[in-house]
Amino acid sequence: MPEEGVAHVPRKELLTFEEIDRLVGILRKQGIKHVRLTGGEPLVRKGIDELISMLGRHNDLELSMTTNGVLLQRHLGTISENRMRLNVSLDSLDREVYARKTRRDELPSVLKSLQAALECNIPIRLNAVIANSQEQQHVIELAELAKRHRLQVRFIEKMKFDGSTSRQDVHAGMASGSEIRQWLRVAWPELQAKPRQAGATAEMLHAKSWQGSVGVINSRSRTFCSDCNRIRISATGQLRLCLYSRHDTDIRSWLRDNDVSDSEIAHRLARAVLDKPENGFVAESAAASSFVPESMISIGG
Image (tube, rainbow, N blue to C red; front, side, top):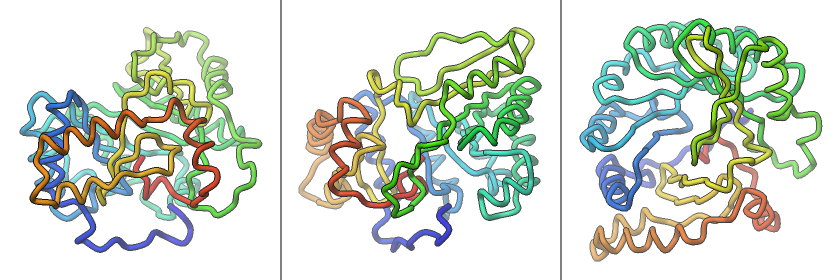
């Protein structure tokens, strides 16, 4: 969360649930197999259970949600009924550190929600953004959860998406994915690498004695771009083909134009996807001349 907060978006600029469901239906026919609701925080959207249920009617889709977990417990019934997987953002088990990073003292309620989700047998991935070597202990403490519980803990290289206007080299001193893997293997030599599936962002590690597994996402090093098969659509209906890109395509206008059919939207989407950058470095280079400070809370993560 940026220190200054985020700008309010008028409700009329947000895609309606019906527009989201229509778009998902179009994408499903084009071969999309997995839809994830992200934020900001999707659980603050009024009536979110209705949207989850609408998407759950697409029986052949894999559904997931990224959430901070604060409001999670009250929605677990709907999430479970619709076979939705959870990605929960949790950077530290230290209450003071958690409060400083998130600007809210909600760690106890998040942990309570996680326990309830595990009891509902909902598949869970914990996502922890790791900034530097001073957070090594947070990595070890979070990895212990994967050792004891049937969940994944994935450690993410910190990226420059915090809303700052600075253009200086902020990568200096940041922990790399290879460093994080080294910390894990020193602590648990029994951890073995699992083959990375095509399109996956995480490089996973597992040990036979563990209930779950741990992994590293090289989001800054960008080692998975070659087989990336993801697109992002913002809450306001802007299509972005790469996280590092600054080029968006307005598909909300297509959805609200009565003269544009589903088949025409599918054709336009297919044409737009052809412009997906070769990798994140290419996208970042192309965007360098039009620098705009952005936060993951507005991009969707």
